[in-house]
Image (cartoon, helix red, strand yellow):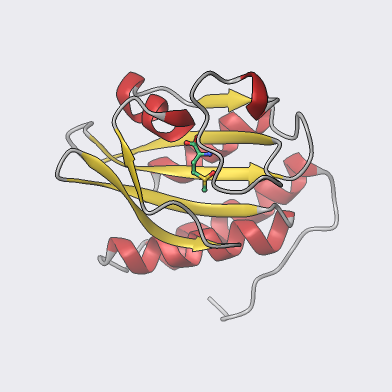
Length: 156
Ligand code: SME
């Protein structure tokens, strides 16, 4: 594919639909997971203009900061802690409309108001990372984001 991201001008659904084949083509022949995560974080961030878009990887029973776009963030998160640690522990996407109402939310940035965290699995179904996206506005993420971001996480 060309090295330039094509961003749909449509609604959220149309943006995801235009983005998915571009992400597929970027990751399909690239075996290096970190390189793939870096491009996926960039492509999502450029398309939607969120506050923070990135990955935490499971390393020795902890989440460790991976490729991201946005301000600097916490480096390590323990299992079950915050939204990311909960998504990993429960192996379940977490959609958080208001981070202040999520018990144990880890505030890496006070500008973050809502959040979605999606587990990323290996071929055996083990959680190997989470995709964490933060918005500076309340209630940014819904079932549409969950559905499309889970699709994106599944092709990594
Ligand atoms: N808010 C996250 C921590 C990571 S930062 O948002 C980048 C959480 O509670 O898991």
